Amino acid sequence: MKFDVLTLFPEIFDAVLGESIIGRARKNNIIQINTINIRDFSLNKHRKVDDYPYGGGGGMVMMAQPIYDAYLSVLERLNYERLYYKPRVIYLSPQGRVLNQQIVKELSKEQHLILLCGHYEGVDERVIEEIVDDEISIGDYVLTGGELPAMVLIDSISRLIPGVLSNEESYSQESHYEGLLEYPQYTRPYEFCKRKVPDVLMSGHHENINRWRRQQSLKRTYLKRPDLFNKLSLDETDRKLLEEVLEETEK
Image (cartoon, rainbow, N blue to C red; front, side, top):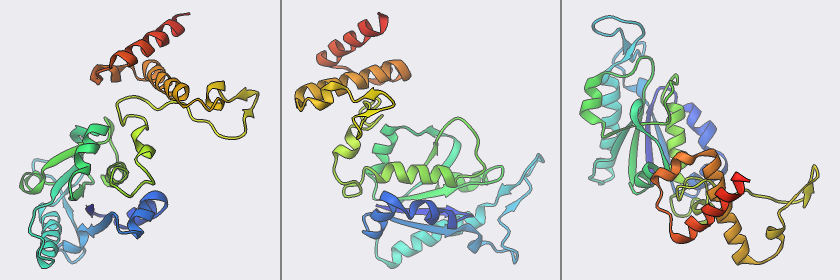
């Protein structure tokens, strides 16, 4: 899986994505993250990449030319490597689709993504129309730039790439992977602040443990994110477990 990031601040990506699980995946060449500094493609002697918006208004707008040339540099590299395909280009934008696990799964099937990080008041619309295939938002709020959303996107996608995590179970039971929130987790010591690990987890009875965990996932989702049930199709077993949860919470 390849990520090429068009950004004004390439240094921050190694600082965040050079450690832990993602850093190890990069060292093992399971994923590749390349950063392209948009300023390197400015035609201005001061490496200027923004200008005042036509029509007036506050703030500055990133110019189309440096972004477009930065994008072309990725295609030129692919041609040099005799890889003749067009990567999917994503603009990190508050106007895009709001990121969720379904979108993450969809994007994890791509072999190569180019991520465009905007700044200031945004980027010239013409370069969006020319090169961007999709716009993604990480939430309904405003950030100073697209670098943090790009790192969130890279992290969430990379976890689904085979070999990045130690085994499939590491992500298949996490919150949102199947649409439910994850069940509670415990480790040593057995008792902490007078709170003990649930007896079922100490029983060694795997069927009961799996049933308890599924029920806890349903319970947590019902209490914390009931809106998620609108997107789920529960089987008969889950419906029975959910009924038990509802009876318990109504007591």
